[in-house]
Image 1 (tube, rainbow, N blue to C red):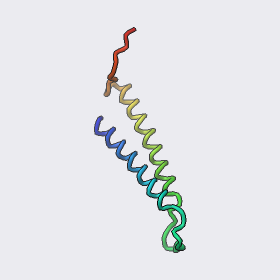
Image 2: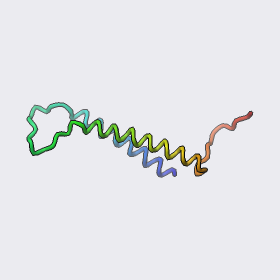
Image 3: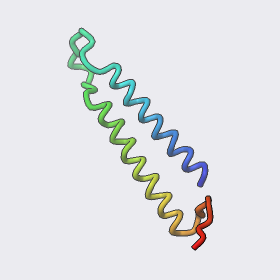
Image 4: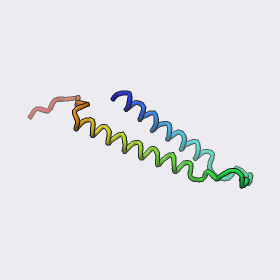
Length: 80
């Protein structure tokens, strides 16, 4: 389970880096795009949508893992 969470965080951070690079490259570069290359206008939006979707998926996996008993909560005990 630890490796799954680490891999998910790496994928989330990676998609943020991809979105940052797309944002920094965005806009016009002063040259006209040829019709042979497809436009990449939505590259940043797709990377951010992937990040949001993967974050929700990670939350659901952790929640299901807790409900199934695969992971246990840690921290301060509740005195009641």
